[in-house]
Length: 174
Image (cartoon, rainbow, N blue to C red):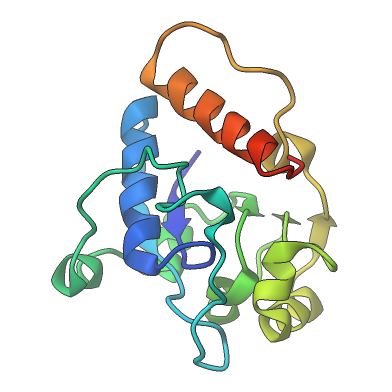
């Protein structure tokens, strides 16, 4: 993992940044964190999607969200990707952020046609797919859970199990 870019989608950009920092901290992963799109390509907000709980992490996210000044200090998606020019981009969110980034030779998207992330900003999805060479429309290790997490009592295991439980309770697939 060379870097992560948080983008709005199921939650606002400040909440996505807070959640991403939280999860990276739980995992003990120190990589650059950048800011992605706050709105859809046409400037409208992303549709309200509370499907992952009130904070996007089944109620287990951090209480504090970064303010505008904190967000302004984060690098852009282009800055994060420039630091890792040969890295494969795996997009787990709407593709809006990628509109401002030069295409990469390797790109995998969980925002495939007909999927919720593509539907959140269909114009961006079409535009990015026209410019970027998509190498995988369902990179299972990135989009799904290839195996159940180790059931040890760690913050990461608790978070993963809570998210899985939340998805199951609302009748959603993985």
